[in-house]
Length: 106
Image (cartoon, rainbow, N blue to C red; front, top):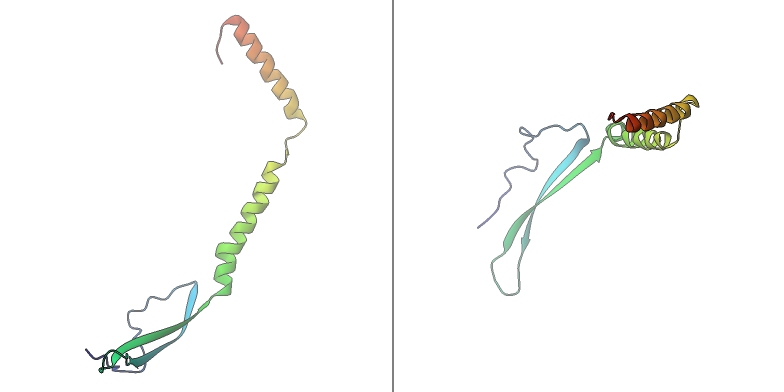
C-alpha cells in the first residue's frame, strides 16, 4: 500500500469553526520508514495541527463563572441575616411548643 499526497494543504470545506479555538495551520507530511526486517518502505502521513485558544472565550466562559461561584459561596456561608430573625426563631419555637401541648401538628 502506498500513501500519496494530492496536495500540500488540507481541505477545510467541512471544518466547523469553534468559538473557543482558532485554527492557525495544518501541515501534511508524508514519511517513509524502512525497517531492518523488510526491504519495502512503510509510508505514513503525519498531520500537524496548530490551534490557539481564544483568550476572551476562555475568560468569559471558564474563569469568570468560577470566580463568581467562589465569591457567592464565600458570601453565602457568612451569616448575613438581620438581627430580627433571631427573635423570629424564638417565636417559632414557642409556637411549636404550644402546638405540641394542644395536639395540633405544624
